[in-house]
Image 1 (cartoon, rainbow over the protein chains, first blue to last red):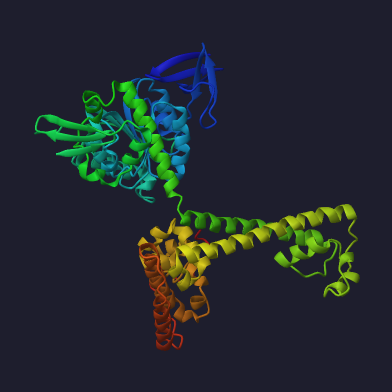
Image 2: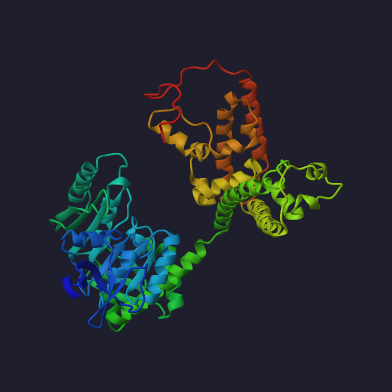
Length: 230
Length: 337
């Protein structure tokens, strides 16, 4: 078994000929959602399944994840915290703001927050950033996985309010939640177009990649804000 | 310009923050303030970094303190919010779901009992609740008393004898199912009670169980009150509705509200019209329940008037016309799942 850091805070653990994606467990001894714990050179790692996490799938698709150990991350669509827990692992000196709209899933997310020191839970609608602008600071990274028909707009309003000029937007677009019957590649094209032109805050797409076979009909995107011309 | 942050109220002048009034550094107090409603009017402009200001104005000493305090406050606030979302209609929703679960289970159990007990007493001819009650009371058919209506059948049964070990098993099985029926009755009674308290007008218009089901399907009384009544009318007829939207069928006339006697007991050509009137009144009733909470009996009177006028205007069945709808070619049974 040996360990290879492929991006800051993200590791590839080799075990018996298999490569396993993992993050360093910030809460050693316990797992969050039944994932395997891997011991190596006195460090404990948590296996990170790309089929359960869009962010992990983006990593395996060789998309560069701009999260550093001291990053400030806004996570929209935190759900019950599967991916958030790995982001939390990646931020020993940073903080992640986890926004989730459903009280039911927030119940589980809060239990995760109780065991971690760097997650700020926010029960709010991600399409209305003004409702949590008194909590969230300027962030380095926005990660968004909301599966809403207006997800491009949600990304734009949040980036306008919270994303630093040189910050990155990581976005997972689910074609099926925009149009259940249309051809996914057409939906992706339209969504990319919206991000580039439609809203006050516009984006330059740095990289995009289909997330199949980990997630069908999902597109992963990395983008930066276009600087506004004055 | 004033803005509100989680740690205090800031006054912003032309060249930055001119005044900072921090709140008390108490987690509980801060959590309550975090949930205040008027933050939207005083939100920081885009690009404004609230963390830098918190350190500059001395509310916290450094980044670590900012992080840990904000984390504690947010967790407390989120917990408060969650406990406040547990409203009475959440109880009703869970009760309705539990009712459906029990129905599923109890059907399976009573069918099994019918097969099992049928080996011993095939002439019994009871099913579901009455079967379950019978078996858990008597066990073997030899225990049926002479005055019981089943006595004659029991003494002349063609079924095999039931050994006492098996009798214990089957009796225990039946009494478990009995408990489920009891529990079902209790849940139903509690739904009736809660609906009368929480949604008196909806209950008056359509009965507590259909009302509770509508609330359960929409996810709350407030949500139900915000829906258009055309949605209320077809709620529960999802398959028929989507079939219609794909252009393969005429529109559904009623969903769950079909079970209301006004709709159910009317002849087929009046049902659509009555369902529409009923749905309209359910919407009104839900709004009364949410916003005033008082009982308005005249709404029921109005509904009855409307239903009577529908019945008077449409006494005879119309001559059936070819249904409209794009691509609709007669009845399409099966194939479309």
